[in-house]
Image 1 (cartoon, rainbow, N blue to C red):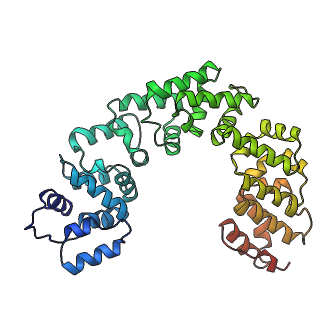
Image 2: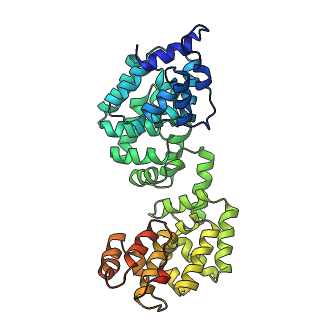
Image 3: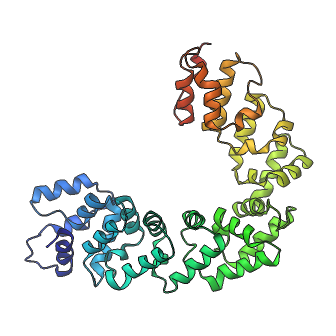
Length: 389
C-alpha cells in the first residue's frame, strides 16, 4: 500500500492497536512547528512519516497548510485514494508549486472523486482550448470555480468577452473569485451598468482584465463607484475611465479629498489638482505618505519645479526605491552633483536603455557605479556617495 493511502487509512481507523502509535502527535503539531522538527520526531520514534510530513516533503506544503489539509481528510468520507489524485495532477502538468497552492487553498481536492468529478472538469478546460500549463495556473490560483456545474458556460462566456485565454488567465490572477462570482446577482447587473453608459464590450474587456474586482462587487457598490468616477469629469466611454474607476475604488471619498488637500499643502493650486485628476487619476492610488515622499524627492533632491510634475505626473507613480533614486544617483555622479542632474525623460527610459546608455559605458571609467546601481535597483543598500568620478 502506498504511503499516502496507508496514512489516510490510519487516520480513518484510529485504532488504539495501530503500529503507528505516535501519529496523532505528529498530525496535530502546531502550525508553527517546522518540517525539520516533524522529521526528527518521526525518526526518533522509528515510525513512518506522518501524512503531514508526507505532504510537506513530497509537495512542498507548509506545515500549517499540510495540517489543515489533514484535518479535512480526517473529517471526510473519502471516495478516492488521495494519492491517486496527486498522481493524476502531476500527470496533468501540475508541478509541486501548483499542487501545494491548490491543496492549501482547497483541500477537498485530496478526496474528490477522480473519475466522476476531477477528470471530467479538467477535460472541459482542455476542450475549451486551455493548455496544460494554463490549466495548472488557473486551477491552482482559483480552485473553487471547478466545483460549479455550469463550469463550461462560465468559461465560454468569459472567453467570448475577453477574447483570448491569456486575457482570461490574467483576469483570474488578479481576482481569484472572477469565475466563481454569481452571474445573476453580480456579473450581469454590473456589465449592464457599463453598457447603459455607452461602454463598449472592448472597453469592458479591458476593465475586466485590468481590474476584475470591480465587476465582482455588489451592483449597488459598483454603481456608486461609476457615479464617483463620472463626478471626477470622466465619461464612461472615455479611455481614461478605467483609471478613474480604479482611483475611486482604492479611495473612500474622504481619503480622496485628503490626498487633494495634501497636494495643495505641498504647493499645488486648486487648478493644478483638478488638472492632474483629469490627466492622471492613478496618482491617487498612492498613499499620502508615498505622495509626500516622492514630492520631497523631486522638489528637494532632484530640483524639479512643480510645473515639471504637472507636465509628467506619471513620474510620481514610478518606484522611488528601485527606479527614481538609483537613476538620480547615477546621473548626479556622472554630472558631478549638478542640479537637476537628471531629466524627466531619463526616468521614463526602460531599464535596459538606461543601463546601456549611462551605466555600462562608464563601468570602467567610474569604478563601483555599475555595482551600486544594480544593487539599488534590486532594493539593496548601495553607497553612491563614495564613488569617485
